[in-house]
Length: 464
Image 1 (cartoon, one colour):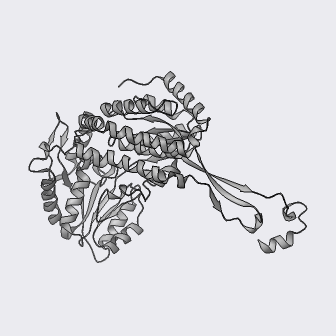
Image 2 (cartoon, helix red, strand yellow):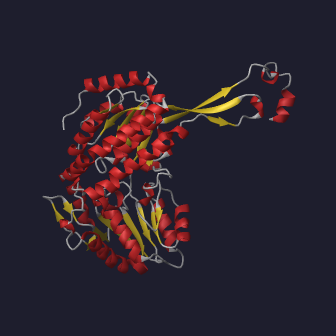
Image 3 (cartoon, rainbow, N blue to C red):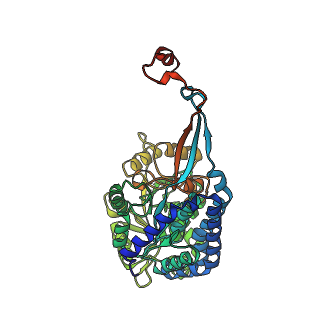
């Protein structure tokens, strides 16, 4: 894909900053109209977007709709319904020290935002943040991934057909383009990608003190206790891992399983895959392929780091990798230290002892590693809450995988190595908004205690 030139980027950015200063985007009515235009555009372009994601990732229409298009459309509808309320000035309580004054929080857009998305969910992860930018009253420069060229071109065509580039524009290209963009003076950078690249983003943004929302990833644990409903757990875990061929930032990355249920889980996991994809997963239209030859080589390289106990088939020509369970890995191996981002599943079997329970060992194992984006526990709910209380993650589920991303009423985001900032629903509006504190003081009277030489100091001190 051809890089957008530096001159074009400068031109677009200048236009957007100029347009923002006209204050048109601060009108809530205008924001709602633009959200409605985006919704209409997505509905008109739905077929083209689905075709593009099939060409780039072998993602079926059904999966593209459920995991990408429907999520964005739902987000837009929520913002259309709620932005008028979210954008209202808030009246806040004032302390006695400013008696007579009124205090407010004013919601103002940050300005011109840069939104950079990855390739794994190229529609959702670019357009969902855009909904927040429009809702908050920002202008936006969108940078899709070059690894999914068909989707990136379709989105550029859709956006250019729908919006003037002084309001919303798409720029294309590789990491050289990203590097130039990160150095520009945006009012917010919203980046979804790897923790390694996020460090580069932060360094560049620091030069302009540009605020960031970083949606990253990491090695999200999947805990299977002996109290788990193995049939349900196996199906939900198989679905969560095989979804998008494991190329999901919140995919369960590795399994910590109680030794009492390990054999039953492996057997049921295989049965669940057959139920989901049929006798030949390679022939299923619903099984996504690895995005590139480079990614295929990286993921298949993990196969030699342990013992395969389920799956293991690959095809380089079609970039197919079968969902695979692996055990007997070294704890310092790449498969146990790097985010897999593919359908391989290392399994760590834990045996309870008199000195250490299963949960104690699980918590200690997880806490030795970076904080993950997601956390999954299968077993009794009360034990799930104990595991959650003893660890930290961006979000998670008890007796499920992936589904916490679906609820727009709860924030989505990472912590530590897995990210900073949140979005979805109202959180998306807040991500692109500055909460501006304003105090309005009357002039009809003027309390003397704050002025020098502090004659009423003893009285004021007794009150404070």
